[in-house]
Image (cartoon, rainbow, N blue to C red; front, side, top):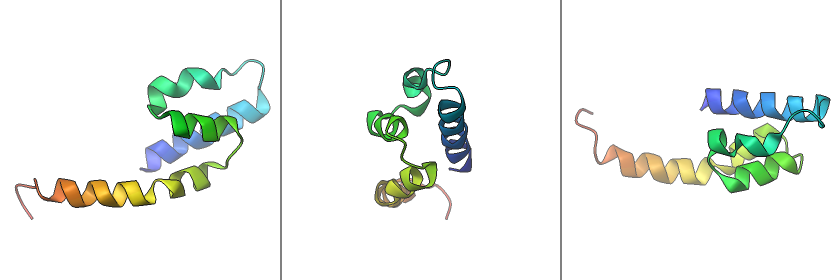
Length: 71
């Protein structure tokens, strides 16, 4: 999770500092989520983007726990 946030922080800063050179739209392959890309392009702060994943991450965690071999 921290590495994803770090990537978003770096992308946001590069977009802010070098808007003509940095092609944020090419990050879709790394991010893999169109909503996240839209938020980044709209200037939503990375911490708010990560916070918006909370509900989905909780649901994913509950599902994956069913498949743990060891508890």
